[in-house]
Image (tube, rainbow, N blue to C red; front, side, top):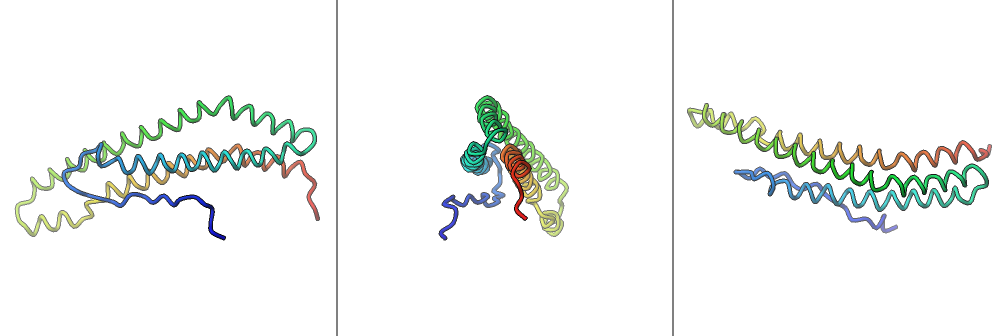
Length: 168
């Protein structure tokens, strides 16, 4: 097998170039987030449609559920997209705040440093910890979005499982 056919989307490498300009520094993360959102939307929409198609072949309540789910997806899809789009704005805002806080802390640390040895010790503490924390927040947001987008499909599968006779 050659795989899923989906392109691998890697997290941008952590760069700590000084001075940091929040808009410019955030751009690779914005693209990363947007690419994952598009890939999730496409893949999970296809999966949900396939599950709905299988339910549509079942008699009675499962067929009705498939029809109802399609209607809900049409009705709520635009609102879902709008709300999930706000996550990107919140992530960008959090990134900008983290950059500003980092710059402020760097300035304070440099002001306190009086010797070269003290400076080396102060910068050895892991100057990129703020960026690692943001990267983890970004991963967590994408996983939460995946979970949210999967809920309707999982519910359809659960309904199918509860309505079909189990083979012994």
